Amino acid sequence: MMSLKFAAEEQVAVAAVRRACTLTSSVFNKLVKNETLVKGDKSPVTVGDYSAQAVVNTILGRAFPDDPIVGEEDAADLRPESGTALKNRIVELANETLTAELGIGEMAEWGLGPGQSRTPEELLDAIDRGTYNGGATGRMWTLDPIDGTKGFLRGEQYAVCLALIVDAQVQLGVMGCPNLPVDAANPDGPRGCIFVAVRGHGARQLTMSGSDPKPLRIPTFSDDNLNFLESVEAAHSSHSFNDRVAQILGIKRAPTRMDSQAKYCSLARGDGGVYLRMPTGVGYKEKIWDHASGSVLIEEAGGIITDSRGEPLNFGLGRTLGENYGFVAAGKEVHAKVLAAVKQAKEEEAKSKDKL
Image (cartoon, one colour):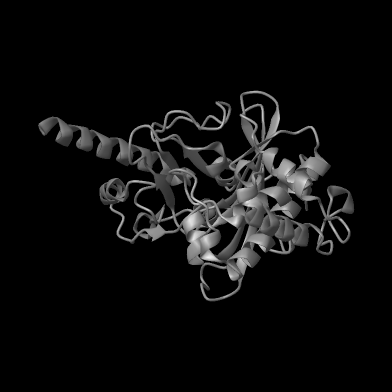
């Protein structure tokens, strides 16, 4: 059953994420590596990123025209003549995705289905709807069209992440994970799932077509069965710090490493016991779109997510989460123990620095 609270938003968000997942899977299968742009020192931005944002923002623009969107991309690189080849590919992919036959729970009024092609200008404008700066009041969506770009390029884990924030609180989160096994116990079995959470109404896993909802609850782990979910890239979070925290907690199992917010999805269904992400350097601020959907999924699956000081995450500060104290997400029985171990590891780290 779909939750009554935010039911329309949930239906639209699931359709938008599912379409974006179809698109990104198609891009991967046809991927030409030289289509990757590098914007300064930011993470690689692929044709899939732009196309997926065009599709999701087009759907949101039709269903909820007054809602602003905090997105990762803008269309500035696509407007000059030098961006024509990339723009043409994006327009083709976005229209191919928008005009596909209607699926479960989809409506033509959202700009979907045969005959609903958009002009290049409409699609670039849709991408540019993602430039809202966020803030503490009102409704806004936040989108990461391909979270985990490196995982995407390797054919491993990535996620399409969409969340609705109302007055700085995440109310709805939808994540599509095209490469995540439907059942972690059967890693070679079918892949591709959608995760949905509505605040106060629980969390569910759906098939990629949007059917067969299964409620999610973080299980209780015995200490000897606990392990960490971590980023693949050591640059994204401190593996050595996590190893020390695991040692303090007496965790024997090796960490499970994967890119993207798929880690939150895995935690919500019990594929790992703790997601710990500590900053690797001073100054980097985490973006709201990298954690909004995951945070409500963890809470609605019965878990707790805070920063490493035990403070709640603040989604009302703009496009970032402010000063970075890292993230600790775990089941209710485990979270306090992990925070205490993090505190101990930090104190040890500070003492060893003092000795230098």
